[in-house]
Length: 337
Image 1 (spheres, rainbow, N blue to C red):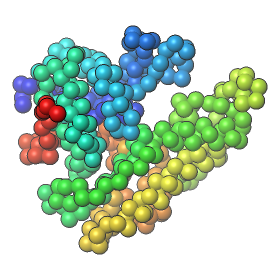
Image 2 (image 1 turned 180 degrees about the horizontal axis):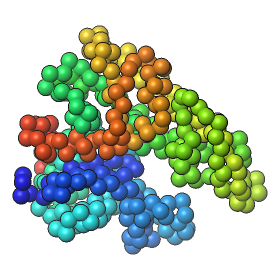
Image 3 (image 1 turned 45 degrees about the horizontal axis):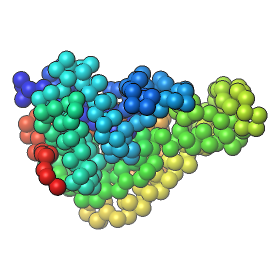
């Protein structure tokens, strides 16, 4: 392991997180690619800078959708570009540990093998770690002697609830609501109240600057958008009340589903979770007071991780460094259909 080029990779939805064992450092890059026809124009953060600004003949998109690889070729280009920045060897003959979603089909699992054994990336060994396990390891959950722990990850496109007992995930639920849906909800509220169309990037900025779930302050921000009636650019002052109304619609749905999910848990595990608290992570948990709001809604205490979107890749880092944890990494090989 010491002399191998070993990487921990979390493809995510919004951004790709890569941990390099050789450099002992994590890297994060937007999971986006800009193309004109078959020609690649920009990858990663450069492509994100073009998002919602691109001309009609340029397409800017993410190769991931709800945690699954939607475009294998484009995802390989994004990962190859990041690895090339990290190491001049360009990801050939390496060991790759992937954080992956639950309940994948054999074909979806094999996609991860072909991702790093395709055109640009070759001769790599692949191991897969279930994302809730990686999150739990990063947050210090003892998987060996575990009566029951609940991990909630609120990501860019989805929210995942998982119950872990004795190192195994016994119950899980995936909800298609995340940070991107919050951004879109803010855009919808602004359009409804101000007759102004703004992009999701502007919605995200408003969410990060003014989003509050408790102790709401009266704030306002000036934004530029397109007037829904005249079709001309217009400047408008947006109230924090409107921003929070959009966010609350999504958070309330997540909290309601979480409460229903908790009712399915066996009593002995339910008691342990109530005593231990629910582990909360994911990029969208950067919203101030989100743990307190969910606690008031569900009646449970929450252990909020300060790793946010890097939680899974931090779990992979621990697995790579500690030999005893590698039993939670499953090898993936090429098999004929």
